[in-house]
Image (cartoon, rainbow, N blue to C red; front, side, top):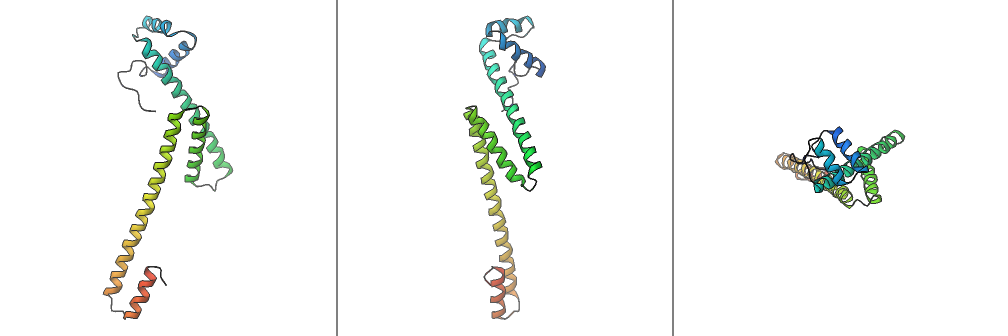
Length: 166
């Protein structure tokens, strides 16, 4: 969830005031809440209150969801310490996506899928770099063999070793 705009009066209120506002909204209408805020010196619109209410609810749901996933992952790491960090991350992504689907939160589900694809892309890029570094090392070793005073048969044998053909 991105950071609220600095000119958003309600979203930049201190956390305690946001919590009080959200609680007040649960038992009062938007117009009543607007009047209540005005009596406290905060001028806003009904539309801004409605948008704040949706934003605040989503933020709280995401925090709860994150806490649930963290708790489950900690328990999983305790029970199966042999799992790699990558495996734990993938399980966490799956849990987070499942929670998003359960709550019919398409935006969050889409973001978890996008993040998973980006991680796979980074992993593939890392593997590609490792292979390129290996090839560069092999090329340097091969150049040294060709420039050496080994016999042609010895050079062929050594090149096969370098390139894994032996």
